[in-house]
Amino acid sequence: MSDLAYDGAGRLSYRGARYLLVRPETLAALQKAVEALVGDGATACLVAGGRAGGGSALRGLEGPADQVIARLLEMGSRIGWGAFALERFTRDELVVTVSDSPFAAAYGPAGGPVCHLTRGVLERLAELAFGGPAVVRETACAAAGAPRCRFEARHA
Image (cartoon, rainbow, N blue to C red; front, top):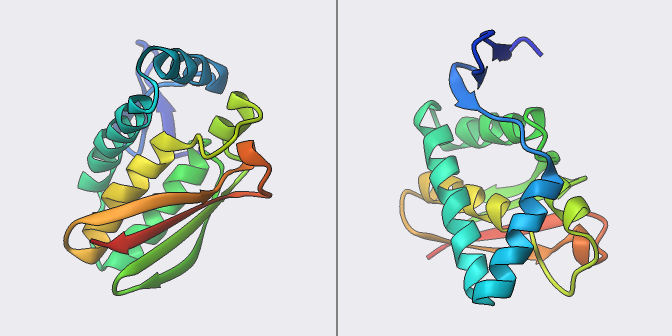
């Protein structure tokens, strides 16, 4: 993976942008602790984190929406967030699936969606693709027994 580089001084980068390796279990434990403290508000906190990271990742990507979508989904797969696939993209709908989500796997069995960081990243992507506000829902999650996680974005 030539896009990933370690500089020998403690910095890891992917295509020139700094990243860090964190075990999925670390993030799942953090997520569960925030859920225990703030309840349903934890989802909004994690989505906000995903939006921030997604916004940073998108700053380095230019071109038509379909090409930006393809590059961000490839990046997500290459940095270990699962196998991203574009199911559908239209003027006001974006549907993405993720197989083998590390967030769902580390979280363990759940009663509903848990991939809130991914949702936040895809929300930023949808806003760019639609040229305006977007709403993203995780309509299926491997942690809740689905074969893969599925995210549906709509132009708001």
